Length: 368
View 1 (cartoon, rainbow, N blue to C red):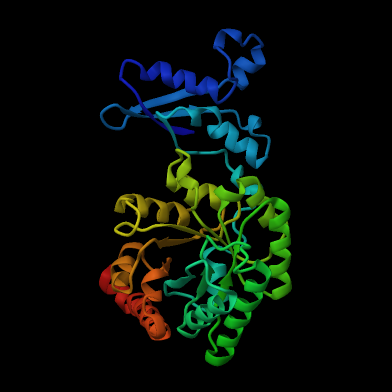
View 2 (cartoon, rainbow, N blue to C red):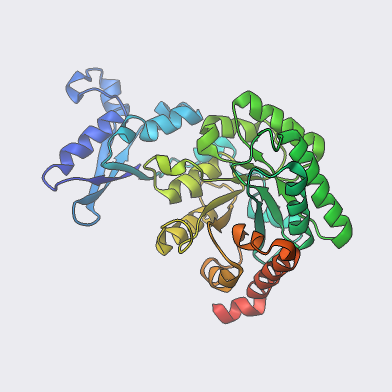
C-alpha cells in the first residue's frame, strides 16, 4: 500500500511505523507477543520517499489474509483508522496477483460498451438530464431530444432519485420509452442510465424496475450508497453496464486514480465519471490524465473501463478533450447543451458530429 504523508523529515519514520501498526494490529509493537502475529500480520514499512517539501510517499506491506475477501473489510484495512489523520492520504495499492479479480470487476468495460452502442473505434458521447425539479414528461422530452441528436448514453442527473416531482419508476418508464422511440426514428441506439440511490433494499427494488423496463445502463455513486452495497448490486446481476458517479468520493483522502480508476473498477463499474480540468472543478490536467490511464491500464486482469470526463464541458472543447484522452473516452456534456432550449436536438447533433470528427482514425493520426 502507498500512502502520502505530510510530516517533518525528522518525524516521518515514526509516523510511517505508526501507520503500519494502525492498519494492521492497532496496538503498540510491544503488545504483539505471538510470534505468528509478529511475523505474518504486523504491517511493515517498506520504503519512505520524498515527494516534495514536507511530503513523503510511504510504502507499507499489509497481510492480504487480514482483508478477508470482503469489500468493507478490505477498505477498512486499506484506510480505516488512518483516514482519521488529516496528514495521511491513501495513494495506491499493489495487491497480490488475483486479489482484485475475486471481486469480479467490470462485466462490460470499454469493449462491451462499444458493442452495445455500435461504436467500435470513436469516442463515445453522453449527456445528462437536468435540472431536477422538472416533472417526468419534461425529463422524458429532454431524454428523447438527446437520443434524437445521436447521444450514446443519456444519464439521469445524479440528484434525481425518487422525489415527488419525478418518481423513480414513472421516470424510468418514460425515459426508456423515449430512447426506444428515438431508436425507431433514427436507427441509432441510445442507452438510458437512470440514477440508482438509496438503501440496499431500495437499490434492489430499483434494479428490478430497470430489468422490467428493459433499461440498458445504470448510474450509481459508490461512495453515496456504500461500496459494499455497490458491489453487491453489480454482483447480484443487475445485468447492464454501470456508470459510476464520483459524488461524495472527495470526502475521503483517497487518491482519485486509485479510487475511481481502480477501486470502483474492481467493484464492477464499467465507466467512471470524473471532473475534467478547466470546468466547474479545480482538478489539474495531470490528475485527469492519471485517472484515465488508471481506468484503462492493465491491472489485476480486470477489463479496462471507460473514463468519462465531465463537469462544465462544452462542444467547443471537444477537439481538445479527444486530443488529450484519445479515442477510448466518453465525453459527458449536460448544461452547455441544455442552454440551447428549443434548439437542443440541433446542438446535440453538433456535439455528436464534433466527437465523430475529432475521433476519426485519420484525425487521430494527425493528432498523434
